[in-house]
Amino acid sequence: MIKTENLGKSFGPVVAVDEVSIHVPGGAIYGLVGPDGAGKTTLMRMICGLIVPDRGRVLLTAPTAGLEQRPAGSVLGYMPQRFGLYGDLTVMENINFFGALYKIKRSTIKERADELLDMTGLLPFKNRLADNLSGGMKQKLALTCALVTRPGLLVLDEPTYGVDPGFRKDFWRILYRLNKEGMTIMVSTPYMDEAELCSKVAFMDKGRVVAADSPAKLKSSFPYRVLEVRVDTRRPGLFNDLPQVVDAAFYGDKFRVVVEDVPAARQAMEQRMAASGLAGELRCSEVSPTMEDVFIALAEKEVV
Image (tube, rainbow, N blue to C red; front, side):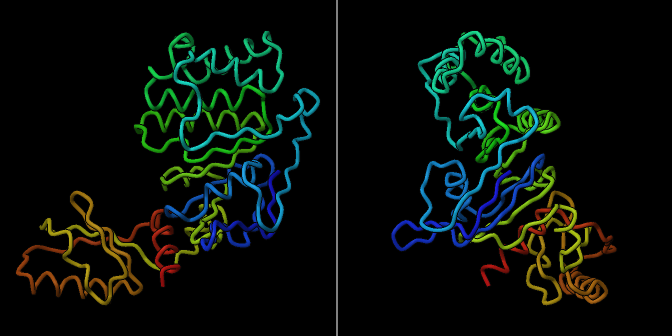
């Protein structure tokens, strides 16, 4: 559905996207993750035709199923990171305006809008000014406008950034429903729990895609072991400088410790506890890596 070949874009001396070749297959939910400034938004804007690449090319394949029902120009829908609709128009007026840009009949817009607003929970607010919507409701309105043309491809740039966890869950429920109906989705996200929900994830850093695979395979290729450690202390930096520890973080009542050699790391942590005058047993169990562990390891690898 989406394919890029050696895609590149520079802004003056800054290389934003550097020889990126990716393939988003039809029916996938393709996640794009990476630190700020990695090139995710620039890549998405080139895919959507909003930025002209300096080199390489973008290939979009229209879906075959239901293609005859799709109006011209509606192969791709795009939802930018920032709310870009009109605050002084109502929800329905924004949808009408967006649909009119694609020359969709007013009766068709109304029919689709009622369906989409019901799906997103915005139907009771169709006459409310966009400026008077909450942040999450604005994102749902932007999604509705992107969907009114019934695109086969949907590109979303950090659609849940800065909104509450309840909205994020609801938004992903909508994305899964759309995907189940046959829509191919490409979404960038700063949240690793959302990356877990994608069928494939690409990690970008410094303009390049440095890893791309399913979440399960990315986690299975994680080169370290992860320990959940409980001790009778709340000193966050207790294990940070141990040579046997790759990374350590403190969450509430436990440490999450990344190591290469479990016995050696456990011995080093027990010695650190004794040297710090901490009584009690070090309770340690091995757990599976998460996408956040993978993200941190890839980011640190690129820094080095």
